[in-house]
Image 1 (cartoon, rainbow over the protein chains, first blue to last red):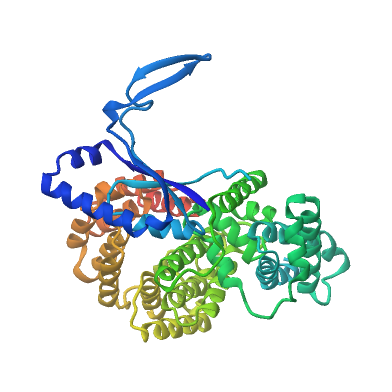
Image 2 (cartoon, each protein chain N blue to C red):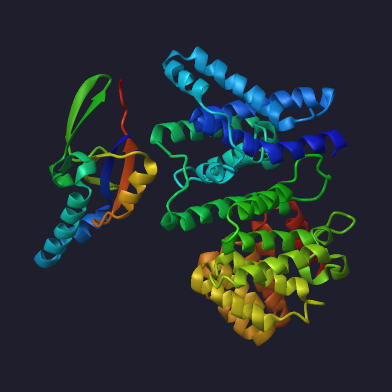
Length: 115
Length: 399
């Protein structure tokens, strides 16, 4: 099964992350990188996303595109990154997600697989 | 319940789980197996009461469910290859696969409603109509819930297998929580009209006994089964002849079921020998203290307070702290108990039993106006009709 892990956090999580000292930040990154290395053979495409202040939203009103600065829904939850995960089943995906050292929360979404 | 209907329910719960597990094994598809067994149960409900229960009911259910499954696969071209595999599969062995079935139904990625519905259907052989009746929810709601749950099982890749030993304990906790919820749904229901339907409390106790049979060395299922037996032992004394609720202190203890209590105490002791305490074992030990006491006053309250302290260390919650305070009232007196309770006011303001207990303790302190206010608040918050009636009597008897 293929899943996408969405690495999420609240505005408070983001603020706490921004407040980390360089040492703490280095330590956090090291743990996160270890997680990615450890599970490397089960991961597909992945990216960390830039902060929400860099986001732009295109929405459609009666079919007319509308461009605005920022997230579609401000302030509730932020997606900080994502990775594809290929494992046998949800239990394996859950075991991986439970060992995530980056804080916040992870949404696990099975992808639509077309034959 | 008529003899025929009771016999059908008994057969369903004994056989439905086995038949479902066997079909999952044969077809390798949980959703297909579960659906087809449900169809077979509905077919049985149509024919058995008329023609009588067949001599080998499990074989009957298996045959009908298997035929259904084969028809479905045949209709579905995408499954043609699977059909060839299934036809070649060897006949089923006798081994009991129901643990896997229960764990799949109670997978933590499913909603609690879905866990309850799937467990009752797949393991205990309830039909959608029976679940709907038991939970007083429209049948269409139950059906919709289960369709959604099964879509999630297939879509999200929820596996059908026994988890690793590390995971098993956490997964087992979910199973036990689901069973206790089902039990309470039956146990707390008003006894008003004697139900002609399957009794949820009895069914949940049967399921807990099944889990214990499948995992004979796990102490928490022993604790849960003991707890259920202790509640059931007091069952008939919880309501008077007029259907009014009777509190623990006023129950006729001579009518408690000694045989059930002895079985429960045996289970509590057997679990304790494992020296792996858990919340259900401690709840059962507390209930056992009550069951063994000759009266409310001659109850081993200090022991109950100790058990609550152990429970708080394992699973802290405001409701447990509230119960501890009520037990401590009998040991340390009302002033301390009230202080303990008042510390919980913020968290438990919406919990009727908090206010009911507070009312009793205030009454004990002679603070009648405040006691009455607390009882009124408890009454306002209570939904269960039997509890409402009891609180109403309490509020107005004092005038």
